[in-house]
Length: 60
Image 1 (cartoon, rainbow, N blue to C red):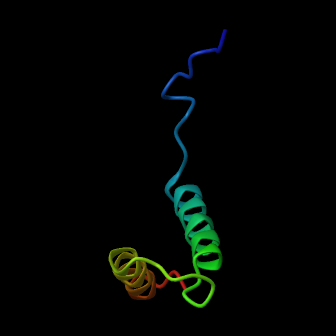
Image 2 (cartoon, one colour):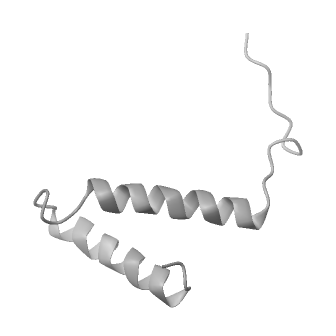
Image 3 (tube, rainbow, N blue to C red):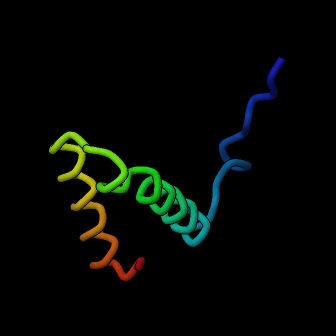
């Protein structure tokens, strides 16, 4: 049986959360390179927007 996780034990700080998000985004960018595959146009728009927001927030 799995142990229930107390929410107070499962919290992470803002910097750790941002690092995790950046790492996930980078892996998605590597996996979903436009030259590697043809993406549906809506997905490409969303990826482009994510990249613009990253640049705006100084993440890259």
